[in-house]
Image (cartoon, rainbow, N blue to C red; front, top):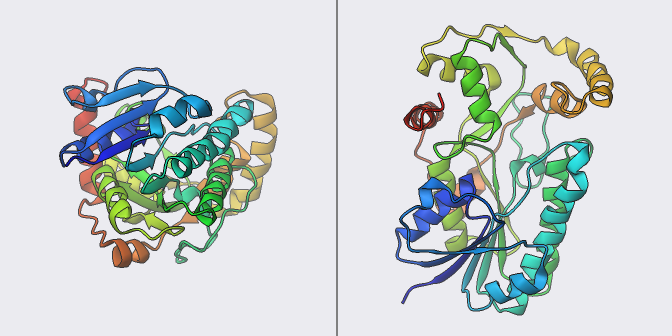
Length: 327
């Protein structure tokens, strides 16, 4: 008998890769997503795609009913102040609607896809952040909204909902072009990147991430959070892996750490004057520090075994960009 599975946000980068994985295992899949283009990875799959907004509880409840498992990925990732209200509305209020509908509909289990951004960062490069760390809720609008969304999930777990949280780090792989990953690849390919910041952090290949999300549905404990992150690397090393694959010169210059406060002050000024600032306090805080993650809990409790190296993930991503002729 086929499992009836609902995936919110299933037309996005991670969602489409997840749906494709679930489809291979003979599941009956419904996607609930806002109106927009269908991801090319979904073409040819016999799935149900329902258009809607997770902020519309009545419509959402009708869709959730009858599904055994729910993967909640629908979210907005904007970080600009102008869209803060919208981001909070979707990522917090929308998440509450999803959890409420799942509890009301007696869904067997929910996996809520969050972000490692909620764990914050460290000023020390040798510190590994784990599931017990929490974000200093300051500048990052998206991460703050996701942390508050996690709190909503835990509220419904306390009411009896069986729900597990997964926290991906920086995701790399085929399937996304509307992102900083593509813009970076394009800039490096044109020789426009001459420096980077001194920070670094966790990365995960899209195939490994999807495997981890599926394992969380099978083995994840209710109310628990699992970090899905593989290699921890400096920004300079990630940039140069991409440069090497693109046959471009190495990027050699790293902005010195001692300029942190100067850059932060500059960010304060620029973000007040420019609509989409090239530098902001949020950018400085995140890219001058370290977000290295400990994935041992996911390995031990979920049986997660990431197989794809960062180098291979970048190579596959570059090949994908070239195959669709955007690079």
